[in-house]
View 1: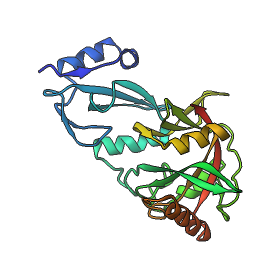
View 2 (view 1 turned 30 degrees about the vertical axis):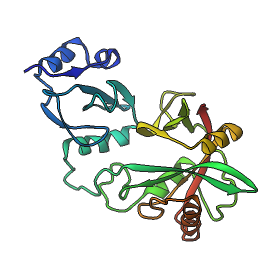
View 3 (view 1 turned 45 degrees about the horizontal axis):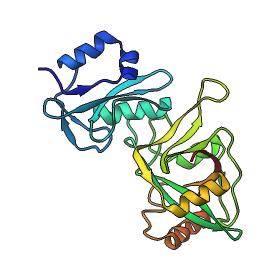
Length: 257
């Protein structure tokens, strides 16, 4: 049965006309699916559905989403993230499976440092992050970030150094992604974290980001920070994580406005 699928020109260019037509005819497309954006069930026989192609260095995965959540598009992601996404989408884990695919949660807030309010993002995964390909259960989130250039935080009141090649993408006043260096040579980048839907930030946060033209990115292991309703509580949680040796940070240039 034909599906109510949206296949963008970018997706069609990647998968080819023949595969695109098979999808539209219902040959290779599932009827029901879990939306890759909001994670709730969808039905391509009953509602408009977007085809979303995740492309890594070596792997490509076609996923489906409610058209009301995100448009059909090609999303560049890091290869190790894509391997985890394959397990997430298919519900399969390797035989020596460790933790399931964790999602990176991001909270925005203003942090007072040296008398100025600085725009900050706090990254905390929803589960342990194992080293890609290890099949282990040890949480390697902070060691992996330190290898990428993040630095351990001992004092939240000190500005972290700028991490070369990384940036925070703000477009039309909304947070879209945190970008890391790609493998395509100088200037190339891929999404380290990407919003399923652009995240709103406060007027104060946006003003501070435009003033300093960079964002402070803090990261802590699962369960360390939590969702704090106020910025003073967020600051307290950051200071506790730093005191426990469980916080890393980097400053990243602002991309966009």
